[in-house]
Image (cartoon, rainbow, N blue to C red):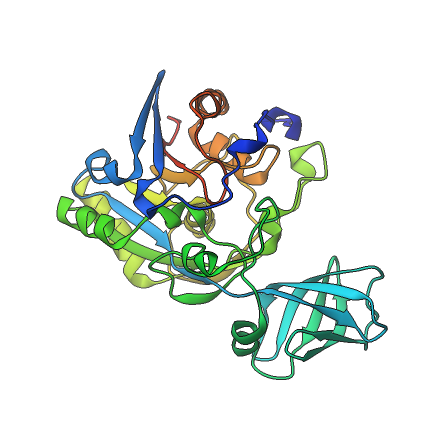
Length: 337
């Protein structure tokens, strides 16, 4: 299938890009496309839209304060965005500066914090921290809000750009479909008989990288590390046996489950899901609205059907839904094979 990124474009009025979260997490809107019907709900309606015996699978990654500001030893301004923590004292990062830093040079950042440039790896730099990476980022870093959010991080963002069930630190972008869940909603889902399970996939900064090639077949995804516990594999098997649906919360959960085939263990995935992909695990998907010409829009189009997603996005624009990380969500069904 010779697909072009041009096939996954749409017009979005800039004022529909959500700059702040909804007043309450579950108070956001939820669009439910089903065939030709497009039903408008509140996210708090989710328990009534799922069935007893269904299984929600969440990504429990925790967003770290991955953005650091400062200067090079030469005095030029520099911005560091950690992509991945490699070890206790080393990380892979994007570095924005007037001139690329040289290997062996030092970046002086807020704190003061001095990072040594160890190597260049494609568009990333391997950096050595003077102490534990997680501890220093928590102390000196800032919330890595997406580039389309125009304000500097605030205390509200430290709380709301994080899921209520976040556990494993390592993500530099939130698994945004999970931002709509709060404790009352999770309790209501449990009361409905909907079960929960967890995977961990640390979302990298590559999730915001544009597709720079026209033909999708030529695009290469950034690798992301994931882990699936045995309890989640067992929960999926039990759900299948009782006839329930596997409901993935977010595209990161889809990539994790489909890359692994729902087998336990840890690995790295560069899976790029495009139309024609044979889904083996996930039946339904909760997801936010994604950027035009993005790999995430391609993924949801593969899942629900390109025309169905185009129709849903046109409806969402017409009905003034809020888009992207702090925006509203959809509950979509897998397209029949």
